[in-house]
Length: 593
Image (cartoon, rainbow, N blue to C red):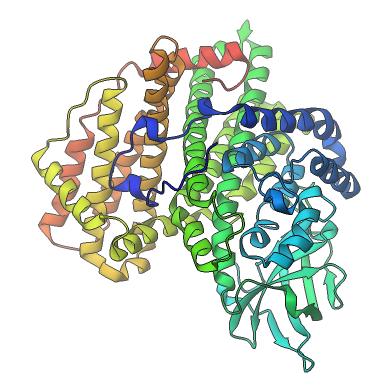
């Protein structure tokens, strides 16, 4: 994809609608995108999946061999600049690989994703020229494998509460690190560790630590519920000697690396979860078409059809928002391959923190919902290891905890909206005032064209978010951060808005291009996504306003205005739509749009 400096402010979707032509969709893949996807798919099908049992049994030698093989195919090099031995591909290529590898490889996919993202990108974006030359070619090829060490026994969601320390030795040649990092993915076979420690107990700083540095050791392998094919251990540093040239980024600015790289980790995780959801839906469709009860396949029953259709629509929304964000990230990061301005890099990485959080939350919860319903459709067989959905169910659960819990990510979404509004990066105040006026007048703009009713519904959801945001800020002001029950619901509305809008914009774009008849599936899926979002936002908004500690009748009246606004969208022909979507999926024997 051609690189451009066009940058839309992160969170802009909360205050203004986007045009269908402005977003990237899977239908826009280039030949280069399709080529890297084909390579990834062939690797997964021919090399990884035949060894799923060995991987699940923690044959880490096999995992390492596969990682090195992936490196030889360029599947570890997509995000490394060409001048440092990588392919320098765009963010769309990155998540194409992430989706495909994440979808069919369980624990192996976690190992590869961890290596290519949070274990490599800190050096890509914040390393010195010398550090990039030393480490990136080896990380891109698979000669070196990496891990990311942030979490500690007393520092999980509160990462900056880390107790690991570093001090400069008397000779001024090495930093001496002491502390323990826990739950470290890829620990047993990693060559490099991105470690965070506080210099002199105060200055939170990142370091590149090699496995052979004196003083570094590993704890025993953790016994996990799922993703067993990825190594998880503690990394222990006891007077670990790290050369001064291995300080990563600026001293005291480790948080800039830690938190911003996690944005990309969240984005990456969303893609892997989307791929996993597609695979789990495929398991369900295959099983329900083969299994017969009462004289016919269970795929023919209405209850099964509803589950299949809902799974497909949820995946459609996840896929739509994921690739939309991929394009946004490419626009903001595509020209930073060799940028030495760390402040600019940090600022750009932070631009779409909200959208990356949504990728992670929506993607992981999509996967959880799909594996749960897929297992249910398997009946008792789904509880048996012989069927792959059993492992998929166990492997899924960690994703709502990885890369910051979904609760932390939800808090981030609303928090960033108000921060961007306060800084003038978003016209939040004006948008809130306009939304309230529109709600009071009951005058949402009437639209025409494809999915006009759904686009009007999205405008109503946007006005709901803005009016609710204004109400809660009026009540709590800067103390809003202490009202997590309220913030979580506001963020949930923001997530539903982004998911529904992404699905509808994608569908409208394709209908405008190819016509309604050819894009019937996309039309139906978008309608289902909006329908589910409206129903959810109706409940959320009433809970949110009803929970405010205020007697201000104007603020409480917002609930009535929102209720009236959302009631404009009536659900029609729902069962017919569900059956048509289910028929399409069953005919394809997998997710299709």
